[in-house]
Amino acid sequence: MALPVFGGIAAEPVDSVAHIIQIALTPVFMLSGIGTLLNLFNTRLARVSDHIEQANALLTDDNDDMLRNRILERHLVRLHRRTLMLDAAILAGGLGGAASCGAAFVLFMGSVRDSSVANWLVFLFGAALACTVGALGLFLGDSLISWHGLKREGPLPRPRPKTA
Image (cartoon, rainbow, N blue to C red):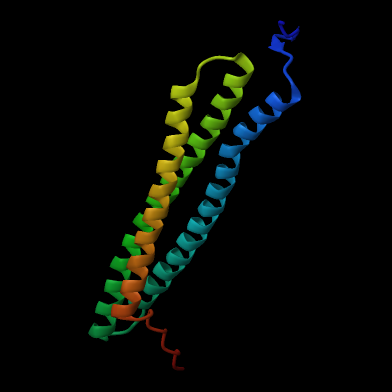
């Protein structure tokens, strides 16, 4: 028995439509997680940027302590590496988010148009997963650089109080 057609879409049992919605929501939940990760990465990048400004300010003050300045320069090199890692993590997370949106769109369009979209779906959802794993790996790289630098060099030197 053929199902009646309304506006180009075949009327289907509620269970079938509910299943389509459940499947289409999977990439959306992944997108929510990626958004949370991007927020974390951006917050961390802002903190690293603040440390770069602080280190630059300390380097440009009127201090002739060569040891202190060498330590600050090493901090700046490490902080630069961290910005590169976090920039790459944000890029990978953004690509993962775009792929998740693409996967949700393909799932929705495939169910509405009843077309074969399996290859696109596998590609887009796979790309979303790969980019998310890459973003997390880059974030781990930033964390390792941070921890190693703190262990080896310690925190940034504090500015000396100005004398009158």
